[in-house]
Length: 367
Image (tube, rainbow, N blue to C red; front, side, top):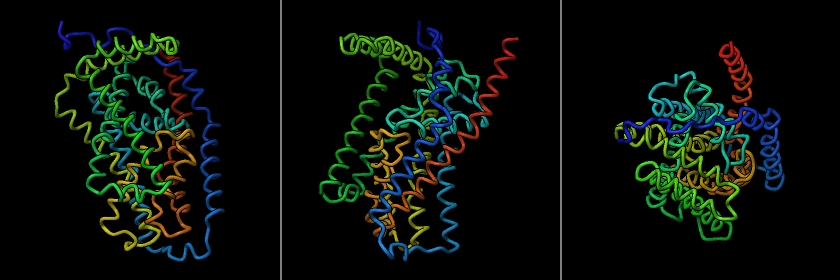
């Protein structure tokens, strides 16, 4: 039987346990990244503040405009994500539902370590918006694939165009460590893209078999059942997405690229908002953009929720050449106020109402 005629759900995919998902989204977890982020910011500020550091700060009409530009960049990023999830669901997820999914997904990422992210609970969010568990698995998996594909393609291209030393600076101890961290993270992303590409588009059954064999090893045996489940998810996803028209893939990747590109111009807008349009030359803007690509890859290893603390430190150190001495901590905090903390607030506002709607829907279904 050809793949096009196979059932889109060869085996029932189990939904995540609701109790486990909700436990990972407890309201008190909102406080942890805020305390870590503010704590690290205060610590850095107390160590590095210098009198006169903010003499160059300008507050004009353009300051407000550029703050709005930074916010608009983040809004564009979210709209791109919403458009992508609608494309991946063949339009079965409405704009309203896609907004809730993305906000809750970002909230889950904000209260989870960066290496974990919110992908594990994203299945639950998509499924609860009326998409079967099998299709939800495919949507989340391809979303992750497209994100990593963007980094795999764009990062080396940006480094080549801008120049290695412009992105990573001189080969001193700290910067050299940043570069190693970025390339290690990049290698992990490329490996993920290659393995998933093989599984999705070439030989899904073969990748499932390989996963099962690897997890038969004694020190991995405890995760064998999860590896089997992952293999089933890859097979299921391949059945649906490998026959997609090329134009639809272009649309989905275009939405992905628009989302990430918009996010990476936030820092540029904030630096100019604080210090004026002459703080960055036209080439400097692209260097700041390239550095943010590297920063995001480095944040892959951050152990704290949403990279709290680690992100502020990396931002301040990595972009130091473009920010007056002593003001880096304030810009890092402003950057997080625009690009991170709003998702904690939106999640806290949306989650209770969303959960109550789920309970009402359950009661109606049980009657």
